[in-house]
Image 1 (cartoon, rainbow, N blue to C red):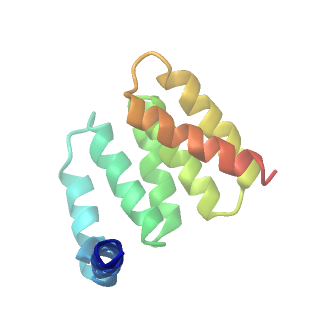
Image 2 (cartoon, rainbow, N blue to C red):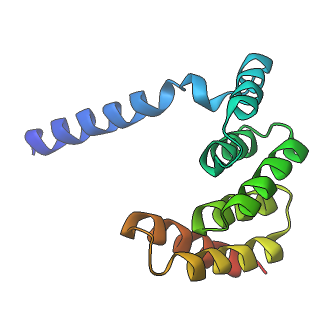
Amino acid sequence: MKTIFLTLTVLISSFVSVFANTSDLEAPNDEKSAMLIKKVQKADKNDWVTLKDAALFTINWNGDLEMAKQWIDKAITIDKNALTLEVLGDYYVRTRNVEKATETYFKALEEGVTNLGKEDMERIQRKVLVYARMK
């Protein structure tokens, strides 16, 4: 019994300590936004990954959503794939357009059915399940 209690205590304290320290990537600030803008400006004109990542960070940081939308739209024009559509869906979630988000996540699943890995497919499927219930 002591072993179980001790093990649970260690696991819980480890779990709490992991989430107690936030990384620098979680909190937006002007410096990070400026770095993203520079990174996008330096990116190759066909580099959809940089645009997608910059949009995703901006959306997750609750940053300039108009800029994020421009970046993800440009990424989609370069390469419309499951990952770019997923970020577009994330944008719609952040702007509280759950119906549009769900439609976009479904499109992402359709695009990625033959070329996405298991982890990516499961992540998008979870988003579909969560937001389809909210419609």
